[in-house]
Image 1 (cartoon, rainbow, N blue to C red):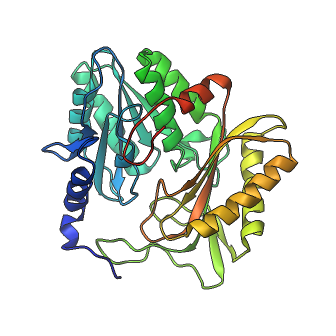
Image 2: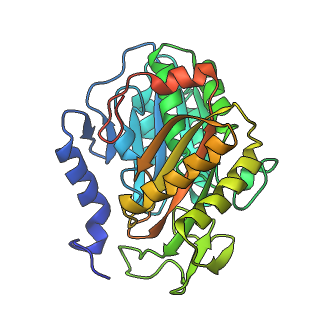
Image 3: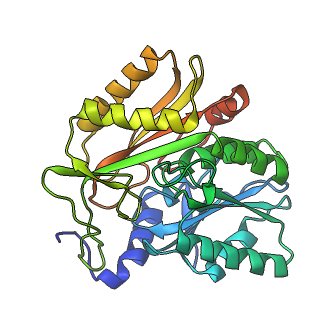
Amino acid sequence: MKKFINSPKNIFQELLEGYALAYQKLVRLTEHHLVVRATRKQEGKVGLVAMAGSGHEPGVCGFVGQGMLDIAVQGEIFAAPGPARCLEALKLAERGAGVLFLVLNHTGDLLTANATLEKAGEANLNVKMMLVHDDCSIASRGEPEKRRGLVGCLPLYKIAGAAAEQGRSLEEVHALAERMGNHMSTLGVASRTATHPSTGEAMFAIGENEMEVGMGIHGEPGTGKTRMKSADETAAAMVAQLLNDLQVQAREELLVIVNGAGATSLMELFIIYRKIHQILMRRKIAVAESLIGEFMTTQEQAGFSIFFGRLDPELRRLWSAPCHTPFFKR
């Protein structure tokens, strides 16, 4: 493993310190390593807190700022933070209207989240939790509790953040986030695995002429290996699965995200998007907006994920509302 790090045991602390120093006008780092907005949200508005392990940069700390998250609680590399830090974040984000707690659906994150909610109840905090479960590779839409959270967290942060900035109630912000969450789907693929930066160990094995379909953001193996395919073949197969999962019809509008896993060039991502766009146009499905880049990564893993989200007029307005964070701005 070759990485420009110092001691493996200090990665978490040093990356957050460097991040906060780089974006001082937008975020700050608290004593207990919470990434918070540099300027607090106004009183009377719903707070937004997200939590996840580190190692996915820019997710999730990259989306803290006006119009999106108020606080990101990050754990060690690929590990959930403890309930104590999450509870501190919920208290800090409270501005008199309650807090929406956004959690990617992974075993460790969910255990931490449930423990945090119990403590929040004991502290009489007004909190609602929203699970991100957009991975269509391992379970049907009828089993959301089995679907992992992937890059679908980004549109949820944006939709909920815009609703909160408008002064909507916690119930309304939660309902809008759920509406988006129930109409989105993501599928990933990897051609080369990542290594854990603290241990140097490979996350899983992929042969030279193979690719893994359905990869997770912690380097989890997907639904199975297949031969390495061309960009067009890969995109076509993934688009077919995503459209089937969402049951998208002609004349609907989709938000499309092509998310690089960490070691895939923009050249490749644009070639992939070219095929996605061709297929959708042929099927008379409109692209409301597209994003191509790295938003939720897995170190130096080579691969990408495709996200489709169905937008109705209200969700589209919220998606287009102003925001200003280090890694997403409108």
